[in-house]
Length: 318
Image 1: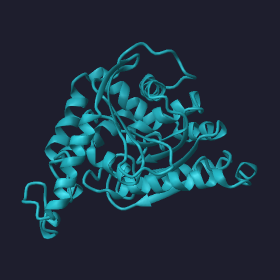
Image 2: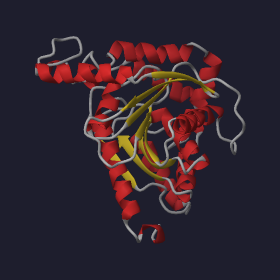
Image 3: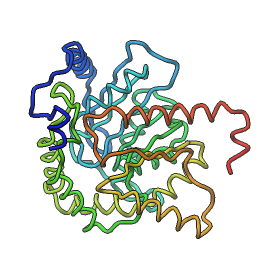
Image 4: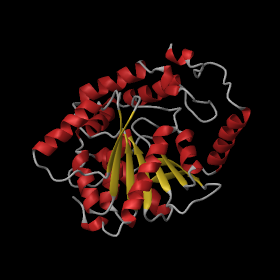
């Protein structure tokens, strides 16, 4: 009902200026023209590599989507391009495959995601790339940074998994409730030219959850039991800076539990904070039609680059 009062849902006519709609459609065509499919050691992947029309001096930004996202989110890539950055979109074209070697007891799913990131960066000859990693893409991005700090400079984590311990059953239940209870207002501003619909997003998640139940349990276990705080500390020690963006009404990773975990770590005397910035935004876990999340991620990356330019930064890590 709230979305009707604001005058737009994905199932109503779009009354925005025609020029804006044309811009979105044109961007999707440009993104699709850059699309490549690769078979990597950790599975198949669809890669978008979009050059900005007005490039800045910043490094390329790789967008790493979360659990269950198999199809491109053009809106997220569009915001990266609009900021003047080369946008690299990474989307698994199938469930991760391949045999993976152990990496200090990390979950296989995180290692597979890390290998996709590393192999993509190597094939694209990217050095010092920045990452925007969403939800279930967080831990794999940090593992990639720990393994290859020469490839990854800074990471902005959006609603990341692993900030608190979680039982697989409880987390899977929240995934299902989120898919069933998707609110239209989460998709305000969405347009079919670049955005998925609430119905499709729910179908995509259900297809991921139930296509292979055993595999899904393994993936959910990785999402809920990964020690993201430890990964952030290790990546920072290796020279990769990290910032976190969390949503007030996150249905999957509640903010109150995250704050409780951070207080517990502080009381236990476990070192300094592992991140450079911690940002809190309105809304739930997904904001498909909203540009603000990616824009905040871009701002966090700019802030971390600025820290690197401070000559006193590396001598003051308190």
